[in-house]
Figure 1 (cartoon, one colour):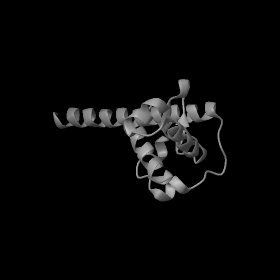
Figure 2 (cartoon, helix red, strand yellow; figure 1 turned 90 degrees about the horizontal axis):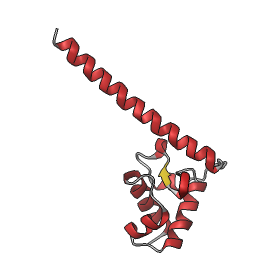
Figure 3 (cartoon, one colour; figure 1 turned 180 degrees about the vertical axis):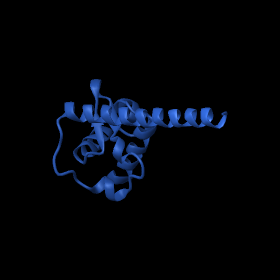
Figure 4 (cartoon, one colour; figure 1 turned 120 degrees about the vertical axis):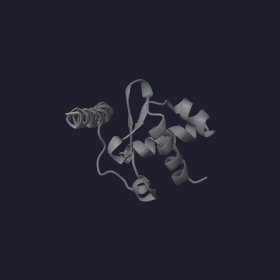
Length: 116
């Protein structure tokens, strides 16, 4: 299996299991731990994965959907510090929660409006 294939599998796993650690990922994907660590480092350098607290990894939210081979190969021009990456991930998660809450409010308003 090529390193690109592994990176794509790793991103897919992190989309479904955010906050996973390297050992957990290695066990789930049936890959050696060192190979997972190297792939995670490459994905971090490309800006596709962020490392949170206690060594947990997350697919970067704005790239989570529709990541193709071109995105996996694309290098990011600069690298954020791990603390900034973790904050970025948290911000994207909060934005997603806000969108979900806004959608719930719209549905409630529609229900209330249709009952009049």
